[in-house]
Amino acid sequence: DQQVKQNSPSLSVQEGRISILNCDYTNSMFDYFLWYKKYPAEGPTFLISISSIKDKNEDGRFTVFLNKSAKHLSLHIVPSQPGDSAVYFCAALNRDDKIIFGKGTRLHILP
Amino acid sequence: GAGVSQSPSNKVTEKGKDVELRCDPISGHTALYWYRQSLGQGLEFLIYFQGNSAPDKSGLPSDRFSAERTGGSVSTLTIQRTQQEDSAVYLCASSPQRTSGINEQFFGPGTRLTVL
Image (cartoon, rainbow over the protein chains, first blue to last red):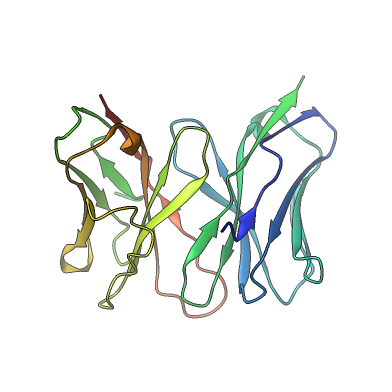
């Protein structure tokens, strides 16, 4: 049973436009939500997080939105740049510090 | 070193052999995680060590998989009698003691295991 779901395996966005990556979860007890970025042959790197008590967190070009009633979060990247091409993992943290990852979405930024 | 390191970076083995994968976490990090990523799949949780507590082994797919963490630092993931479906990238991550807020996990580069 997948607790964190990323239903889009891939997404293509024109350079300069907004990239929106979506994530749904099933467990209302998650404490924090995180986004990780992964390049080929490298481990994932932390990108941005949001507490379950917030609905928005912004860091430069990256903004994460949380809709608790819908159990949905999204990562917005604007403007999208070529270096943003990577796999993005949505993850949720429970109070035992166990992180549950989604399957990832591969983002392609088109020139 | 500054980050999480894993060895070997690549391992090719024959079906039925045992393999050991090593993870050196960031010094001082109390939590250590093992994940694997199979082709086309997401990050699958395997096992989690937190300080001196009993590890959370709930993600280990079978009893052929085991892991230990010696002295609260280095961890070894052992896969016995490897099968072709064990082929994947095995990722290790560590994080510091969580005091408040979010605890970011720092990942190593992974070990790519290929079982022939």
